[in-house]
Image (tube, rainbow over the protein chains, first blue to last red):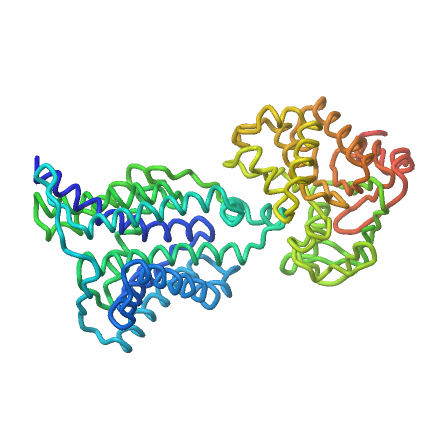
Length: 292
Length: 235
């Protein structure tokens, strides 16, 4: 029982990171129907920005997190403007292939500048641990979960209470009708990329702190898993991405803890296949009408 | 108020509008009638900025607006109720109305206008918190009209407000249109239901395969033989 609880605690910390990344996937998909494969690499760059902010600028956790989120937001907007916007009226497959291209570009440009080697993340939080009914919880896990929850609450607030959020929801349902309300579609899409990328950047910093190591290809696997989380929750659905992220995180740690960590990734992908067979729209997804 | 000069619109190689010219004067109800596929919706979408013309001019109070985006035109006072209503189904009635006032910042006046809309459409007030997708067709049409009015338009473009509604409701909607007009909003109405549209319109245009073929007062056209035969089911 204790081991089970321990794995669940570990799974929640890992899962909240997946959830943060999954939110960006799901928001971008919701608004322009694009699976933004470069999203995992924005997360990687976020980890490096946080690394630089802590190591060279000697910043603490929160300032580093905020700076990373701002810079990643800008990166996300630039990617959208340069790579995706010119393809607004072309086929979906063209944009999808471009996204894969952007992903490779970010990975190897980073590799060129920072080298391919793994770097160890600076210690910015103490490694202190608590014991709670036999379960070990460390400070980092608390920071991760609290940061993730705070960001998700912030996102819910933005989406439901602010004008930008309402514009995002309107554009994701019906771009023409949104324009007739006076909503600028292009800037709404930019905001969506900015928010999604900022969240990915935050996830990058959290992962760096938690796993203590970063490298230019670190975005690939978590990117794919967060994508699975988004699909599991129902792509396009924000609460779905949160639930999906947590489920995938917990599943992974349970498989590692009770089975074999070698099967961790296989289990997650097998799970994706099962979801796609049983409920192709995901947990909270809706059957979308194809617009004619 | 609104003037369209020699408008041409293409979808790819297909020409949807051929040299359309029409005028809507301040305070009028003008209707554009025609069969399915004649180019009615395209005309409205080009006026509101959702479609780009290949050539021609659109003037709002003498000012050229042809190159402006749809949101910029909303700001200048053009508001469209699109075909099929296109309300935001997952949002509440209230949120839909709020989106109608997206470009406005005058909170107090928005509140006042919202009250006016609820007075005009009491059913919307009852269903404020309900998701818009759960409303009936007639209620959705009222919501779409209310939403369009929330931007305080100078000219309201209505695309087939009677589509898919029961005859009794159609009559009600047309009464509402007349009423909106009487409070000073100019209206350009696109309809397949020619008899109803001609009955309330000050002036009318008939469009066939992308060309305006007739125009006149609502009464004149309602009496004309050709219109009787083609659109009103007369002999």
